[in-house]
Length: 295
Image 1 (cartoon, rainbow, N blue to C red):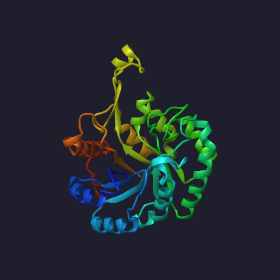
Image 2 (image 1 turned 90 degrees about the vertical axis):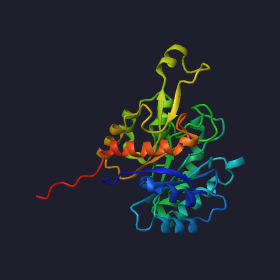
Image 3 (image 1 turned 45 degrees about the vertical axis):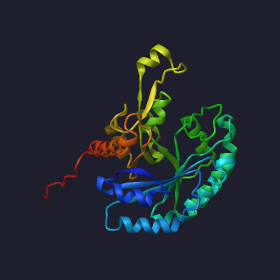
Image 4 (image 1 turned 120 degrees about the vertical axis):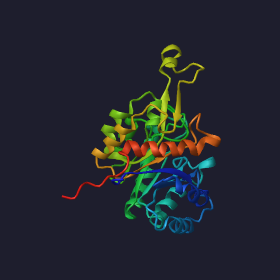
């Protein structure tokens, strides 16, 4: 509706099996994602078969994603950088111009110490992508890291974003944003989105709930959980406001639900939660598209 589709994430290795099963629920786009590596997936063949599945349906592939640590290339992430390259090179087969994932980081080092390596790796990747008409976007998940240390990603804090975009001042790099990760860090996502919306290339549909009573009584370093990731429609964010900010800024991307995190709507209730989120986000988008009267 009006160039803002609501879809969901699917794992690349299961996409050909899962997408036909969930298409009837009304998903309008799919983020095809890989964990650590694209592995032995034949990307060109996968793209061809997905094209056949979606033929004559008003459904798109929104982006390709790879989640690992491309800055170190060690351990399980040894193929992550090469996977970024493969997805950039094959994006056109899927009909997409966007590849997303974690930035990576120097393991257990402060964020500022990762910036030179980020500049080296993504300076080259952004040029490779620019030559192919592809944009790159970084998810804002901290993956249990913080400013001083972590294993996966530096792109979870606005100060880091400023450093990243100053280090690689390319128009084709931006953010894969969602409110959940900001709420987990007790940030207010609304003013943040309003400030950074010009750099938002993709939105993940994931929310969070903060138990402020626990925060006020026990703080954030005690044994009690104080925040949970949620499927949209069950969390604290005002998605009507989020969509309004996106549309006011001319955003023409998608909101793709990132499932598998809700503490209630999981397991046998996973797709129940995702379809609820799909319909909820469509309502926040404005409901049905109603044509204006002909003058």
